[in-house]
Length: 96
Image (tube, rainbow, N blue to C red; front, side):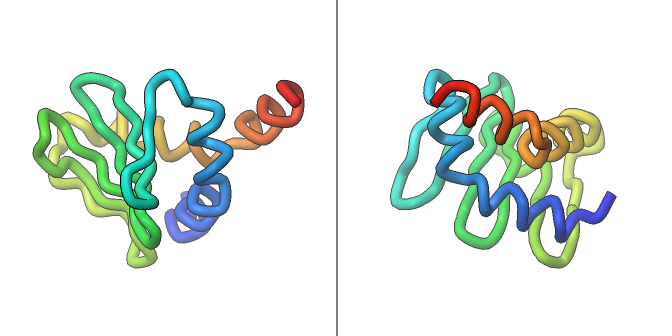
């Protein structure tokens, strides 16, 4: 997977993601925070931080993906795939 491209796609869709996942997320100072207990995903301006029990489990940035918690690796990859998929765009258009 091209992690840099994945990051770009997610950052471009940041506001749509916030709207679509409004039941499980909120925005704080331009950072979209998604809650999927025990994971929390913070979509910042230039990177995405994945936290498990408030500890950093992974970071997706322009340098690629850095996994700090091996147990969370698959879940982080699933979230990256989901957030960058065309399904979010189709869902968003369908709902309008």
